[in-house]
Length: 126
Image (cartoon, rainbow, N blue to C red):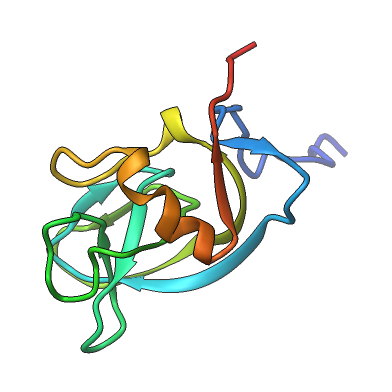
């Protein structure tokens, strides 16, 4: 028998997104609204009040998505269709590794994220 007993199912490359273990890391499923384009792991999401879908957070939005609630746990492409994705709903995360819409920064959304159990820290890459 020359068949391999093991195969590679994927790989993991540390990206410095998580910043600690004092707060449990919890995942939730979210539906990201179509038209968002390609979003990277670490993108911060807000939820649209009407319909409950997620958008990349932008503080000037007025549809509810201006309030940061989740951090995307995987790369997705929501260019032409809604995408059901995994997102972090609690934990400690590196503020420098997060992606925001427009010119928003981590300090713009730290208070909103903290309300949901997401705490931001400044990590130093090793």
